[in-house]
Image (cartoon, rainbow, N blue to C red; front, side):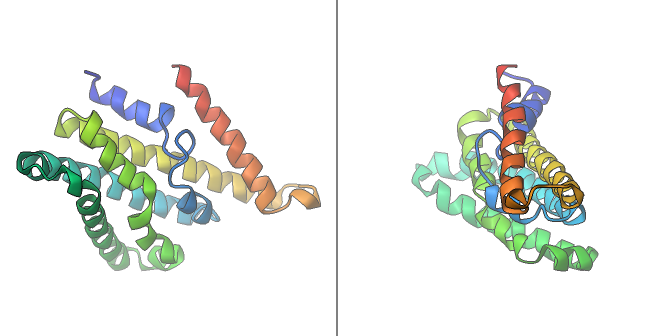
Length: 190
């Protein structure tokens, strides 16, 4: 049984949901235009992934498995994720209205982020305790946030760089994301 720190670091680097498993690419590409919006999106996704993975784990252990309703996992986990996202959006709107306006549609889209659902579903198979689920969700959220912030910083730098005209915009962003993915795949052997 791996310790919680190993679970956390593995989720951040080795099994990064965006760079290694290619989940959550829509918000990764969409919310990485500016560093400040990437920071807000990273924080919101970290909160949602951590809380949703814990709640989904508890729902599965206390309700679905004892009643033999495992076939309802996806539907109920999506409901849990939607509720957590709604709560996060209310908190963000009240405490950081400018950030909420800057992120726009991307905060509600966390509900449909396949990486968030993947964390909840993987916890059903991998986590042996609530602490494992907590660290796996937090590690996945930190990993998502790390690559989102790194990519946003790279995009801001690329805006000022002397990029050949055929590569300006989306082509250079895709090349950069691919190189970043290769770098993260280097952790796989560890």
